[in-house]
Length: 118
Length: 252
Image (cartoon, rainbow over all chains, first blue to last red; front, side, top):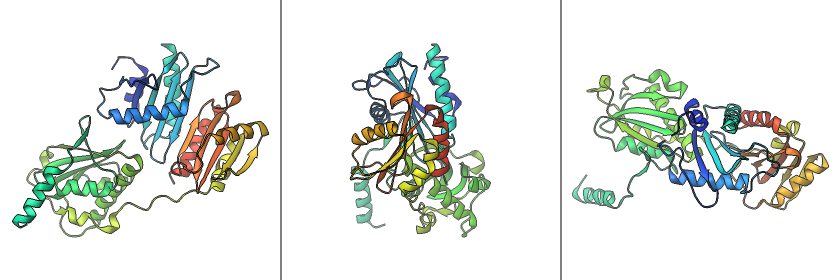
């Protein structure tokens, strides 16, 4: 994992957060966080398919910074983030129930801002 | 166990599914997560520390001779006082706490669809202790996970989220909408509803939010309940409030 990578920061800061990035929503899966043992290929592919459903494959028309989608169950919060400048890359995080949905969303927005600075 | 039973068990082991791993964690079946945990205890003969995890919930048990010696770690507040205490054979309130801790984890695992176990050596201070709480004693019917949460009625969802939404509409399988809000947003929600297969709704109590999914940067959200899908249009700045409200509804 890269040093000073906002996604890595996200992983380190919140217990129970799992994250993966996905390049090219329809054809290829990458494992930027593959060194984390709690992310397997099936999980990543399922999450990426869900991201494609939620965010669509096209970049945002207005050129704004991020797309954000969230799926909440009583026990987990899954967040999907896409940057307008990197429309083929989606960051997916799953937060456990010890993290409130608001906390997860705030963290995701903060990560979005950090990513836009890179 | 007679020779036939032994042969049958051995044959079953040979044709059994190979263990699945998620990185370093061995994955357990979540279709009956409670039984998966009990089976794991029942198969542990040599003194071992078993850590069961689902997301950020976990329960660590010291196990030997198919019996639980002690709870080593738990995030269940009710069971935390047990950590490190050697369990006895006599029925005790402690046994119910262990069962409840397993049931809690199992419920989480079944919701999340994830359960794994890591094994390690026993903690040094538990070496030589005799486990007294057998798997059989844990497998009580009353220790099964609680019944699934009740399905929320569409009207309750509308009541909960209407104050936060520009527009909100409930659709059933025939597409009928019970709607309130501004006309433009309702028209957009109708368009979204046209893309949803209302005969195959996702599980109840799941909230999905997509930022900037509607015109003018509005977010679209959906939640299902009692055969309806409720769609609502909300300003992006109010997403925090929507998620907070959901948290209040779903976790109580």
